[in-house]
Image (cartoon, rainbow, N blue to C red; front, side, top):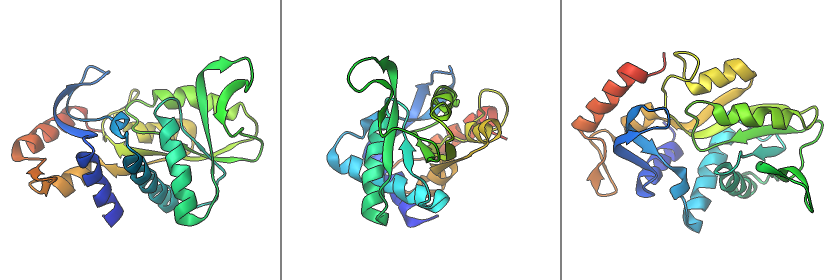
Length: 225
């Protein structure tokens, strides 16, 4: 595993973004882990977050794209931070764009916030985590409605590696099949377990034997095939 991915896993723990215990998800599933990217709140955290995303996007998609699209709302700060990091790390000016939840009918009108998307643009979508692919379902037609636009791929921070809404495949695999573009994550839960199981992080062992057993049991029921 690349060093920046190991650092990112520890960064999620240190920022209290990735937690272990018992959590009820929107789907009703009882999960032994939960990620909340809304807890990246400081300048330092957002700066680091943008760098991790930028490195992963560079690894998977290179620099041949024009716009980072972050769906409202959590995708907005992630997209902005990543655009800044891409400029710093790779000297490439990438524009950011997001959708509005409601169309603005005065001043800066329209459904989009940030850079307009136009014919010929290559777009990378960026999100915190994708469990069901619902946000992609909402934003994909918005992007495609802007013209002859090519969506290069999607980048999320964590692949939960569980069944999607429509099959036993993961949400990221479902997105690839349904929309025809690539979908990747900075790290997967398998990476997280590999790096943290019975190892000390931030002064404590995060994934104990008990937590590991709960994760294994969860994936027996909900894990993607």
